[in-house]
Picture 1 (cartoon, rainbow, N blue to C red):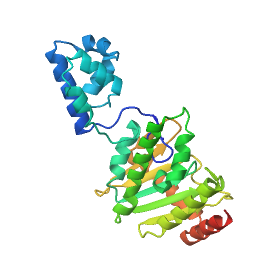
Picture 2 (cartoon, rainbow, N blue to C red; picture 1 turned 30 degrees about the vertical axis):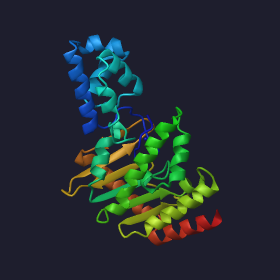
Picture 3 (cartoon, one colour; picture 1 turned 90 degrees about the horizontal axis):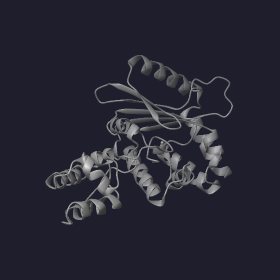
Length: 282
């Protein structure tokens, strides 16, 4: 889908994935608070945050902002420990909470299949195309949020080249490129980028033509993956969140639809030929 990285445009979660530095910072806050004889209920009004937020920070589930660090430092004796600890905070930026489980599986999958009808999938986006999506997100994002999303998007894209034994399949609707999101120059670069990725042995790309009388994907976008242990999962993304699918019966239905779409889309060769013509027309 805060606009955090998902398979496509981006997201809605505000809490980062826990990291060692977040947990360590939270433990320091908790230790200092308890040493001062303060409960979370006592401490919360001193820093101007809710008891729930204090708990999330202490448990390493939430990145503290600068105001929290300064207020907590003041409330807990101005030792300088929190300011120094805050300088070493790190997190996995830009991953929406509801997307993290899928992202962890995506990073170790033996195969990944993606059908998209709304926008070019995140794994195939150029920086200019992705930035266009982020800049036009509603509610608007701040500069730091946009840069966090860009960092997350570019990090995910490394999978395509760093996992040559993972088989990637993409089915894209032709209209995604005819829309010219970001303008002709952005689209020309995007088409060229996709053509370049399609040359990799582990990537297969097909285009669903603009005119198609029967279509098995009318219920919307879908992603399917298989793990090294031959377990299968699915992921369906909507406006404000995503649905993780693990029920074998549901996975079977999604796989059936994806297989039908592969037969309905243009062949691999015809898809690349169409992309070359589209690039030449821009």
